[in-house]
Image (tube, rainbow, N blue to C red; front, side, top):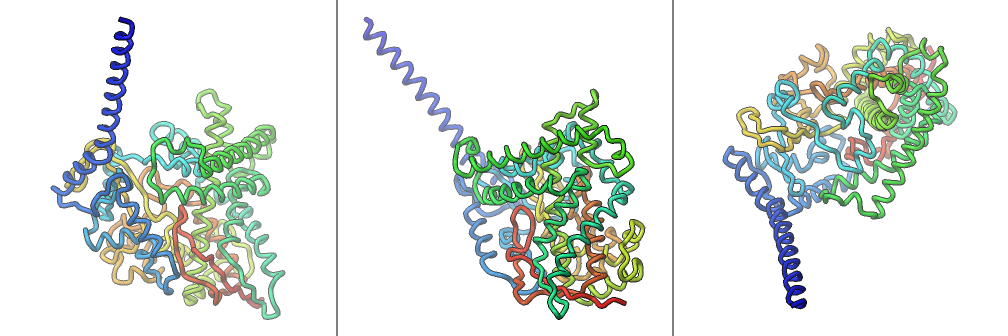
Length: 521
């Protein structure tokens, strides 16, 4: 009797385990086969197709192969960078049209570059779409701040931080930024040859410059305080870039792999360094002289954390600091790098910009806050640089409900990939010279530069437009104005034109530039 009872117990357990295994297998089949096939069929009925879905990996294998092939060697000196940088879009657009499906593992992304559809997603129907969760390694890098927050918490943080980036507040930072630029130029002068020339790898120098400016202007601290954090984030960035080329396996981030362990260590060190910075600032918060200077992000966040009504924690402050240390540095340094390369490639525009700076600021005078606003030619050049070489080449949104988009029926949970780079290089919108450097197209402002007012979105669009864009433009204009006053420059013979993506768009082999000192008037 006892043996029979044990046998029945064992049989029941076996049935239960078998049932659970069957349910798990069924879920896997639904996730990896049935659901993707149903989605493909849904969009096919609307005339939207794409490369065929492959179980588990989707189109990742082909996508990575195209990217690696495109970046395997430098390209000619041309601004037609779409085939190299977004090779999968360039290739599949020719086959399936401007709107098509692409699979990142079992996750579908509807890829579209129609400005009318983009306008719906970001403005007129923005309530139906949300940012997707970043890859865990990416989220550790960029922080759980404004870049990734959603809903009420995002709106609350943005309201607290916004005064930092009001133009009137940013103008107070001009002397600080100008001093940082002048300090950067000192070593250039000291290493010049007898011919008054020096070769500078500008991408590295501009990264250091923007690191210093961000630390001083956004956090009210010395560069030494932020130096270690930037170094650690640079290591995190390499890990995150590798993750972009892999299919995300749920739960994989919890496994103690070498990459994960390294990422955890870097995240702990960054958080620890930021905590020290925050505590030091808290201790000095009673210093009344801070109230006479510009408002900075860290000060506003600490002030909010001391308020019983704002509900901002120390963890919130740490995450926002991560976001601005990463995004602020990368966006501005990339803008400066590509604009310098473009002016080196197109000396006629370098001459025009220098003449304007000399006319407005003098040949050696440090530009004032009022001078910066008058540099219209430099503004046109920066806009054209952002059009041809936007720091962020694509962005993604996800539908929160079943929604109609330009006549298409989009199921809830569909991810929408917007290739910003493709939009910026679209000849049907920008004209036959879309792949040429022509700042004059912005002579009547951004709104009239193209056939569609949503054709230019280097800092995003709608409510989630990059909050730091004014700081990036101000710093870039001031830096370039000071350089143009003192140097002429050209590409070094070692320069190789190779735009590529490591989170953001950057020169794969650096940007060596020859600077020649201008004679004093």
